[in-house]
Each structure stands twice: as C-alpha cells, then as structure tokens.
Amino acid sequence: AIRMTQSPSSFSASTGDRVTITCRASQDISSYLAWYQQKPGKAPKLLISAASTLQDGVPSRFSGSGSGTDFTLIISCLQSEDFAVYFCQQYYNYPWTFGQGTTVEVK
Amino acid sequence: EVQLLESGGGLVQPGGSLRLSCAASGFTFSGYAMSWVRQAPGKGLEWVSTIRDSGAQTYYAESVEGRFTISRDNSENTLYLQMNSLRAEDTALYYCAKGRCVSGYCPNDYWGQGTLVTVSS
Image (tube, rainbow over all chains, first blue to last red; front, side, top):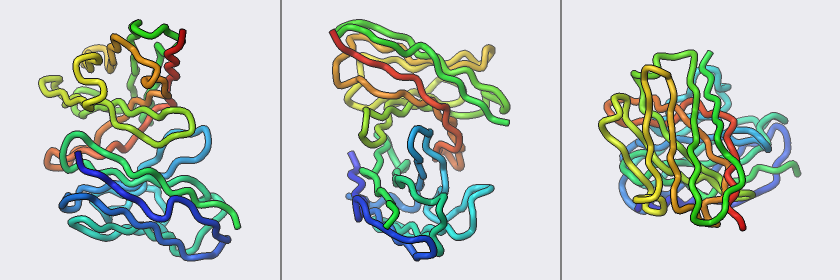
C-alpha cells in the first residue's frame, strides 16, 4: 500500500497567517491527490482534487500543488473557520490511503 | 442538493454481523462510484471499500477483505455494506461517500454524516 505522510501533525497559527501543509507519498501517484478538511463532529469536506483543482465553493485562499510524491496545501490567509484537521488522500490505486492528518489550532 | 444518509450502525458483539445502508438523493446515483470510509474514535480516516457505478467492480481494504461486502441497488439509490465476523478494531464511525470520477479516478466529493459501529462484548 502507498504510505501518505503529512507534516506537521499539528501546529498553532493565528488568523491571517499563511499556512503550509505538506504530504508525501511513498511512491509516484502522479496528481491523484485530494485534500479534505474536517471539523469536530463533522464529515470530511473535499477541498482540492487532482492535487490542485479547487472544488466549487471552496475559498480561493486554499490552493494545492505538487505531483509525483510531494504535495502542498496552502491557506494564504487563515480565517477563523479554517481551524480544523486536514487530510491528504491518494486515489491513484487501491487501497486508497490517507495521511494521518494535520491539526491547525488557534495560537 | 446531494444527500447521503447512513443507517444500520449499533452495538454488536465480536464475531457478529451488521448491515449498513446509505440512502442517496440529489444526484443520479447509478452514474457514480460510491465508497465507505471509516474513522475510529479520535483517529484518522481509513478507506474501507469502493464500488463502481454499475456495481461490477468492487475494491476492499486488506483489513476487511473477506469479511465485508459492498453492494448497491441502483433502483433504490442505496449503498450497502455487509459486515461479518466483526472485530473490536472495526469500531468506528462509518461514512458513505460519493465518488467524482475523472478518467476512472474518483475522489470523494460528498460525504454523509456517518453511522457508528461499536464492536464490544
């Protein structure tokens, strides 16, 4: 199975900060990477697919980049509603695998 | 509006069985791959199984292969997960998720709210 490793696992940030989360795949997954946001008690929400395609309705402060094995999620100007857990997922082949999650906490 | 409503979770003893259902609405169910993803309490996400739009192709995580069966009834817009030989480590919130396939690659663009499965004696 392809292993997905996110970093950092958690960190504290303030509203207005630029936030960068990285995700590394244990093998080449082309651009078949998704980013999800999960808030407490809620289902995950798809933010980005195909490594960089923003889903309808997702604010433009979110962006994704990368291909192959290294990927990045950037939140350009953190808002209060962005404090959450973020997961990356590869859907290049089965079994699909997720990163362990990155918790963005209030500083 | 896309809606996915899971049901069928509950408390079951180790070795027991449960059948989860996911009622879908707001989209043409028969045209989309569907998946189950689970999340143990306080843990991350774990993909469980996926079924293609026609139901002809199914995929499973190694941890559930041979014990769980995914199926769908396109006439009833419903996804199922039959879970047998349940173990304590199957305890989790089970999400139903809709695939958004592009060239056969399908991230999950809509998720239900989940149904909780607890395996305990």
